[in-house]
Image 1: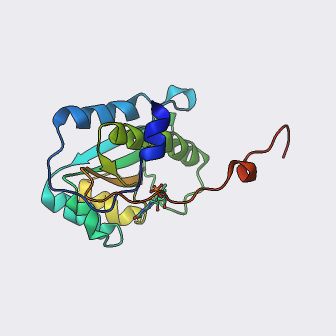
Image 2 (image 1 turned 30 degrees about the horizontal axis):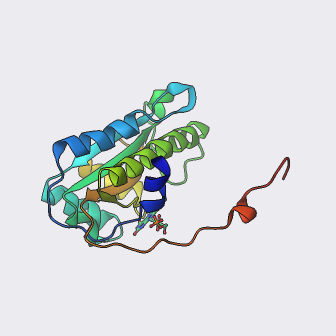
Length: 180
Ligand SMILES: Cc1cc2nc3c(=O)[nH]c(=O)nc-3n(C[C@H](O)[C@H](O)[C@H](O)COP(=O)(O)O)c2cc1C
């Protein structure tokens, strides 16, 4: 059941070198593909990086979290304002960009990544959403145009650790009824 993967998923920061089966990778990507998005614009792209040099470069660019490169696959999730009809001619996006359409595509791509993380758990695989990087450090590594926004660097592989659950706020604290 869905709730089992939601409860079982952890951010995994230690991986086995065991390769990930092609069908499992496809299932994980398929979950992202099927995510909902505003106006069904599906403003996302996923770059699958398997080559070691690429994984190492991504790990280094993600504030030198070198454990990321231990995973046999690193997926880079990219949000694309062009999917919402933005004229991207000459557009350069970064962390300071106030563009409303950027917020929308980040929102949508975050949903798809959430689905991806959960399906990975369902497939017996570990992941970790890593967001500690600058756009300018990641984009050139993979030839991503400057009008695209990199949302996450996600190692994918068999976990070599079983971290305990991190704390979450209580329902009473986050849910209000009828009004704020
Ligand atoms: C947007 C975002 C960025 C994150 N960036 C990093 C990161 O750069 N490095 C890291 O080790 N974990 C990162 N994490 C993982 C969080 O620390 C983790 O999800 C949180 O502590 C809860 O733990 P859990 O995922 O095991 O439940 C990130 C998570 C999110 C959602």
